[in-house]
Length: 226
Ligand code: DX5
Ligand code: ZN
Image (tube, rainbow, N blue to C red):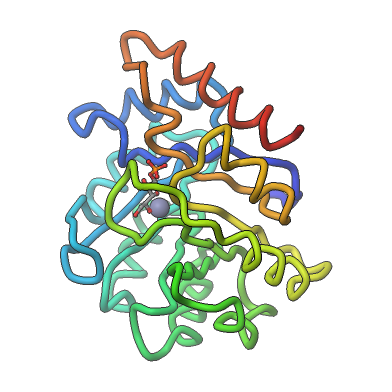
């Protein structure tokens, strides 16, 4: 994985057909996805449950780009090794998910993955200030995590603050929640480069009719790059 700040669209398979993850990953990549965003939820840190490392390992052979695993689980440390072994390129943990985010980041990098930190809407940019020299991505949540299809919460001031703090460091700023062609330009202008989108990518399409995925991805990218 090389680093650049070009706009990358990362469809979230939270909005995919859960009985067809392999084909869905292949379809979104064929339709222009840059990364595949994989949402892991535990029913404890967030009020919803998705799947764990075994499903990630099963999906992995169907992803040629980047497997971007977003862990919405607490505790997180006991599971990092399993998600790394499952083939995650990036493992993102929430700063709110435990008392030792520094240790968590060390564990992610120690397991051989790139390390991301996610910030809930109520968490300030300053939460990552002491970690900037050891992370690869900051995920700014623009919804409270747990569900797809929620309304975008404007976090552009936080994105700007992070962009300033990051400076020349090779750290991606990812936006997760409510991203569509209307909201994408706001966060892109503020300095975000990775745009996660679930409902706005998968709407109107399916594995047997994937062309809408491509149109949706192109619409988000064009809006962000404008
Ligand atoms: C929310 C997840 C997101 C979600 C985004 O908890 O982390 O990745 O799938 O879905 P949309 O794009 O529909 O808001
Ligand atoms: Zn996510």
